[in-house]
Image (cartoon, rainbow, N blue to C red):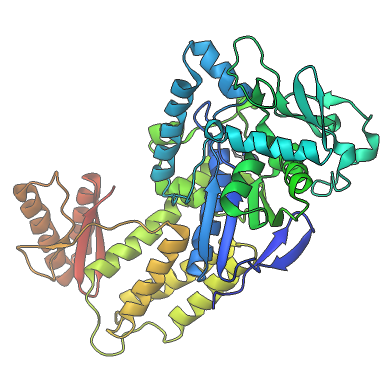
Length: 487
Ligand code: AMP
Ligand code: ZN
């Protein structure tokens, strides 16, 4: 039996328990990137929320089928390709590849399907034909529009007031504001210099909203469980998806609508158009660790705004460092004889709190707090009598679970025990360490161990400092002194 999980549903404005249409199998659609540029880290906040959603559902025992579309035809991609004088495919291929690279860098699990809009034109045309048959459309100057007055539920999701709309006023742009609630374009008449398909609707190309209805229903069925995006997708994009889908099928489209709040910079939404954005690549060039970027972007529950600051970035790096240090200490320390010092309830309490946080509309802040409480208990136990042989696998399993769901546990290098003695030094050898360097480091460590034994703490500290200057960090454990290089 999968575990219970609750979400705040944008559509009902209520907290609801997930109840998949097919028992144990969650079908979800996550609006993907427009592949015209490198996404900024605000976009990745939304994609990471969806990654946490997917990983949590799997960890809670659900089977997941996730679809994420790639918008490779819209106003922006057409403009970008034209500006460079290359084909739309050549232009968008570049950004599709960059997107997948970024997903790998951020440790985002792959969805089951990544349909591209240009490969779904026949299904989009069929959907418009169904809407024609049911009287939801009209044609004007070769373009087909959705007449929102024919769909009584229009405005349900976003709460906009449709009474203001003047009948028959239209909007052709792919993106527009709430003030522009009007009949929207399904199929656009061809324009000079734009790609065009010959179809039973006439020549032209799809409007942006159409693809998500065609691809979600094509791959997940006419009704499915979860649909997500950023809050800016609520209107008009998701409102239009509902109209297109339910208008064609007469069946309820989606059960749960989940929307991620934006990433902000100095009080403003991070956006390409405002110029206040960082791409993932910008941050990597500044030397930030991808794990710390991931940590930062998932640290605040998705329904809350998150302000991007350099302090926040440093705090996230410190969070990762704390996990990494604990992982290293665990890797270097064999299980203690007997019971050890970890309280018997520590792992159980962690698990209960971690799961309760996630089950509460993916409260990642609460899940992270549970992790840090566990790390404190583990470190205290390592400082004292160690962790007993019976408790150790439980700790390892708990950390593996954290990694499976949050994806923020660093890999620690394999431990190398060398020449000196176990009490003198256990080092993590990197590719750049020559045997001579290693021997020198270890002899300094041995000298420090001897100095401490002789209570010559001044000399011991001097050695620690000298090694720190060379990028070597020492940790004193009950098992002896271990060392590693700062990464
Ligand atoms: P786009 O490529 O513009 O279609 O955006 C991809 C996703 O990123 C959409 O789900 C947007 O809602 C989301 N998004 C855009 N800007 C931000 C932001 N500043 N913070 C979080 N998500 C965003
Ligand atoms: Zn979409």
